[in-house]
Length: 604
Image (cartoon, rainbow, N blue to C red; front, side, top):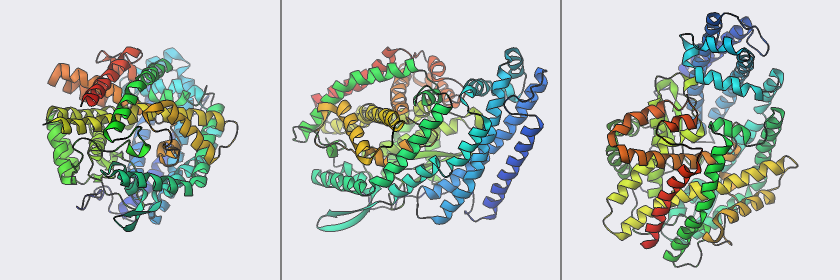
């Protein structure tokens, strides 16, 4: 851990405080706008089977009136939520922040109910195809939101009745959302006694998990054992949370007419099953190469097989640790090799304290980036420990922020990016850094360390993500029949890891509690929050190959792609660059880049 003081993010330009007059005024404004939208929906009979004007211009005007009001509400609601979340995610002991979130959530759920009314109505409108087509070609908001309207009409068939959708939204506050919040509180407050150099420290779980990259193998081993013991102590409430989330989601999927638990995530990802199966098949066939990587790493560490605690062990010139200032400088230097816009933007994020980097008690683990649309900025959470892995993570999250920057000026409904494409800029940033590092290596030890960083990340996104996919798939199938115990979850997770890592790891030492702390499993509105990461890695590598071929001519098209991710399917946007994501060959070609680096790693 670096000795320097690590930054906390600053949102004072959004609101002065949770108790400020400005914050309260915007909450009141949000509620007033919700009332106004209520009145608008009622006046124009916007609901399933409601009145549909027969004149295209009149219909377009009504649709445009809704879009303007909804965009304004989403913008304000997302700003309020991001501001409150900035406190909740960094300090789960902050009772005022948790109270403000609980007060805000009913209004956010009310917004969802309004969305359901419009989606139901637009399905009715779209049934009159010629009228609908004529309306969305009228100049104005309706035409500007054509993709959103067509997608909404298509997805309207998977709605329950308006009364049922409203009840589901209301009950989510004390049901599926509450389970997700409880998991966040429990995991952020776990503290673990840990002995180092003869002294026992009580470490927050985020700090303990960062020891996975410690150069000392015994420290990594002890941290692994301590982490498993920590999850063992809280496994019952976490199992209840996971049962609650998956059980509710399974029930809703069935009532909405979804084919299975994958149906909605695939639609949200804006891909089809052919694309997913092509990618999964290519991933599966790449496992032998990754297992060779794991086996080679085990040999480097003097072991017959790699235990879980050594997956992230540094190799090569492993003594390098970065201060936060060094990490900033390093990232800026590498981004400058790509584009002036990216490096200027990143410097702005660093200089204006958009990043919360310090691991601490009460703060959530992992990393994420959230948009704050009210000020057209982003905020990034990470848990920086000085490792190259965390430098890469920081660059990754800055990529998400840059993606948000490229969408400035778009309406909120035009920015709704699927998870598959949401990882594009973040993976691209990591690739910039990895390639620049490899080009600058001064010897085999340094090259080995850099390859290790890239391959460690790639293995997580390909091999571990596949194990999480298998885990979630089986959980949904079995949860439809009965609740699952902590032992059930651990067994499913262990078997998923055995199926993917196989002889790449020491099968005696896996991680049966990955389900307990990964927040993705507990998201109330998006299941299978795993395969989009792989999509992002392989799509990003494919795009990077295009960049290497075309140079600076690629840059404006890249920025335009990021700007357009809310207004097209993944296949249509990829086709701009001659990429066919429905063909297995694309995914295999991207994985071949990874396999070449595995071969080089093993040579060294």
